[in-house]
Length: 180
Ligand code: IMP
Image (cartoon, rainbow, N blue to C red; front, side):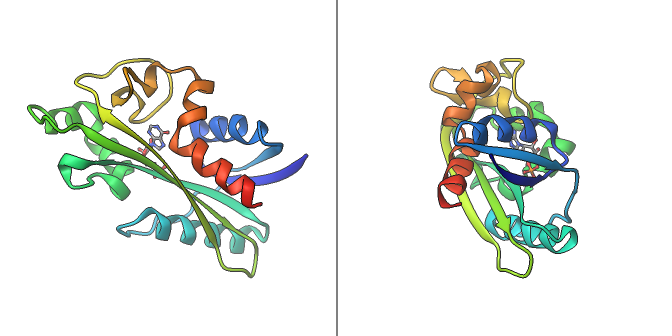
């Protein structure tokens, strides 16, 4: 089985990546490497930079995953700042920001970055459209999953294989595997 080196410090992303890429014939080897997160307004730039940084440092082909949730009524916020917002505000405060807001549309996005040593990075974007729930629901997944509604269930209420089939990460990683 062909191996993909995945640089991440997020155990949830690693588990999802293993399941997603296994279904298309790739084995994921974990590299516990946290790259400096560039301050940029788009995930592509952050992901491309991270992949190139890791490929240089580790001297091997590396995949990274940079993700974010874009809430339409908040003009795309938190987007590339999703990690900071989750760490400092959390889901409960995001729901407070959305109190009384009728437009609850949101997009979850993953940009997979891939780079081989000495080469330019490539990016692969995956998205899923949904809505911000009224309250947190479900014990599965991680991060924003309990507040991201897909049809009538939150990602936190989906089983892993159900989320992976339709998720931003699933779409981005299958696109990458197809290219590879
Ligand atoms: P990053 O890609 O690690 O920068 O993630 C940005 C933020 O989005 C972090 O707070 C993650 O916990 C969260 N996040 C990333 N992917 C997912 C997901 O699949 N579900 C829910 N939250 C996620």
